[in-house]
Amino acid sequence: MKMLRKITLLVVLSMCAIVLSARQGPGSYVYYGMKYRVIDSLIISGDNISAISEANAMLREATADSSDYGRGLADFCLGRVYTIYDNDLTAVEYLRSAIELLSPMRDSLCSVSVQDAIEEIRQSYEVKAHTLQSNLYLGRTLSAITIPLILLSLVFVSLRANRRLSAKNAQLYAIIRQSQEKEEAVAAAITSDVARKDDRSAMLYARLCELMHDENVFSTPLDRSSLAAKLGTNTNYLAEAVHLYGGGRTINEYIKHSRLAYAARLLTDATEPSDIEELWEKCGFTSRSTFFRQFKDEYGMSPTEYQKAANK
Image 1: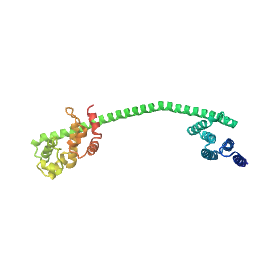
Image 2 (image 1 turned 90 degrees about the vertical axis):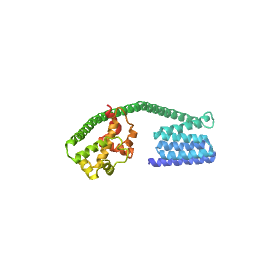
Image 3 (image 1 turned 135 degrees about the vertical axis):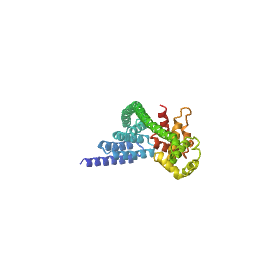
Image 4 (image 1 turned 45 degrees about the vertical axis):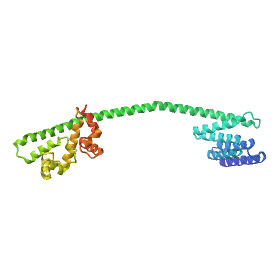
């Protein structure tokens, strides 16, 4: 029954608008006033979708008729509907447009309802504009407080993470130095004992250790064959010596290990600090990315982190 009454009311009002339009003609105050009453009844009944459709149709017709009155009432209806939907930005724009279009008609004698509509629109607009401004101010205030707090939190988290990373790298560097010192001690022991040992592999490994401490050894391509040639031996004897005295490594693994050890020495050289970006070429690596990846795999930290840990 409620739906039937609503449809009946809409039909009656529409018929009245049609009759009046025939007498008054499109663009008249009475014609658009009746159109407004039809849309108003839809809004009151809660049929907002139909109200928007009718208001947009009225807006198109009023624009074609160059009727500021019709456009103003249509904008007011749309502003009311968007207010119901809590779309404040859109509602305020429509209400502002309605005021601009209808205000020049305030003193017109053509219809008393015009002045009533203007006053109703102005009140709606002022309430909505004030609410929107308050919400905007509140949002800006919250942003002004929240953003610095977020930034401070990020800085705190970053500093805390950096301290933890520095502490971890310092411990790792201490372990690395112990391993390097042990390796150097083994090499020194083998070298000093060579004169008293008739051990071909030990003598060959001692010569290899001396060669790998030569800063020019990595300036040319280095592989199994070229390294054996530099030592005046063959790859089989060299592989045996490296395996026995070089921690069970292969020749290629030993070459890579020696390159990284040389890079580590240059990074910790206090007398002549090395440029990290140029270091990989000095140590015989083919690219920067390969050097950084292999260094981190070997020592558990990047060259930059290693240098910082060494200088603390």
